[in-house]
Image 1 (spheres, helix red, strand yellow):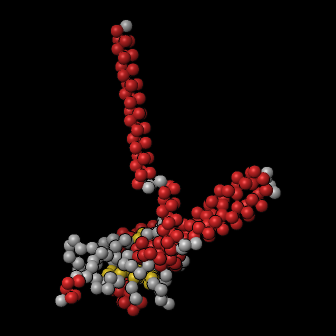
Image 2 (spheres, helix red, strand yellow; image 1 turned 30 degrees about the vertical axis):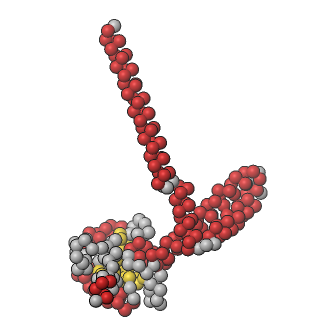
Image 3 (cartoon, one colour; image 1 turned 90 degrees about the vertical axis):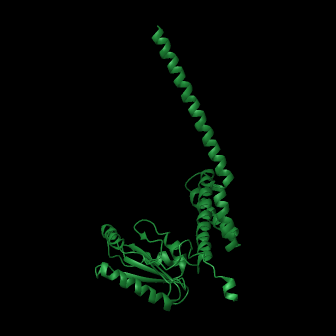
Length: 261
C-alpha cells in the first residue's frame, strides 16, 4: 500500500512538472511572437516593407496591382460561373486575384532592388545569389582591381564555368582574361569557360537579365561533373587585392584631408 501511495505521488509530481513545462513553453512562444511583431518580422509587415520599397521605385505600383487583381478576378469569375454556382466562382476568383497582385508586386520589387544596387561594387554577386539549385556561386570576387574596384565573379553550372565581370567593357575584358588564364591549367580544354559582362553597354548584359542570360547558355556538364569542377577550382587561391587588414573594400572612402593637401 505504501509503495502504491508513493508511486501515485510521483506520478502526480511528474504530471505537475509536465504541465509547468508546457506552460513555460507556451509563454516562450507568445513572447517570441510578440518579439517578431515588434521587430516587424511578420508576413504582413514584410509585405508592407516590400510594397513601400517598390513604391519608391514605381509610384504607380498600387494601381498596377489593382488592375491585375481586377482583370484576374473577372476572367476567373466568368469562366468558373459557367461550371459552378456564382458563390463558388466568387470564392475561387478572390484568391487568384490576390495571387496575381502579389506576383506583380514581387516582379516589380525585384526590378526595384536591381535598380538600387546597379552600378555599385558587388551588384553582380547579389544578382548571382538569386540562382537556385544546380549553380555554385563564389560570393567573393576571384579577380579584382583595387584601384577601379572592377571585379570578376565565378559561377559553376551545367554550361561550365561562367566569369561575370563588373566594370567598363575594356577594363573588364582584360580582368576576365587574367582570370581565365588562371583557370585554364586546372580546367584544360574539357570545361567551357564563358565570360559575361554586366552593364548597360552594347556588349554587356543588364543586371536584371543576368541570371536569365546565364541560364540560356548551352549545357555541357552534368551534376557530377559540376561538383568535380568545383572541387578542382577550390584548390586555386582567390586573388585578393592588397588591402590593409580591418579595411572593407566596399566601404572604403578617400581621405579628404589628404586630397586638400
